[in-house]
Length: 261
Image (tube, rainbow, N blue to C red; front, side, top):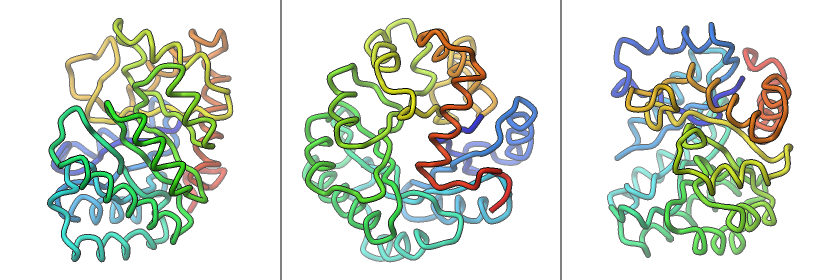
């Protein structure tokens, strides 16, 4: 299993991080894509450092839409530097969030375009956060056309939105939301998407799947999402695991043995 999107900042897990990683490894997680976003660049720096020190951890760096309005030119310069570190495998999470709108929409859009430009310059895939903004996000992705593709992380749309992103060549990543009773549209999209275009993630420490809902999420819980996805598609968990792990390796260009890099 590969957790294609998790936040492993010390601010979330503090001294427990080593135990969190070990529990996930014992559960069968072979690699982690640690997403480095937050105000400033401290989280990105931490993700890069963690990836440098753990053979099965890889990093992404980016500007979350929540933070678009408070990201300085110095931050952008540092993120560009970090994006070229050896074990950085993607740019993001970036994108649009019209639900909370912590940053104005036009500022989010500019940051999204700038992030995609960075992904083009580094030939890295884009990790997109999209909430209540699918039409604008798809339009920006179509216009900016990141050469290495990307993934819509924690996909929350239905079949029409899934089709739009798939037609653009992007992947869809499914989180613990897939296990929630009120997520029928997400389950429909998970059943609809081609097997070679889907990933799984925890988005830890957020969105713990049932039966852990309400608790702090961690990568070991990804097995619940895989199990639900397998049931939706009428496949064995092992088959879904092989497919999603291979898709993640190809998209982020991880080594076949994810513990080697």
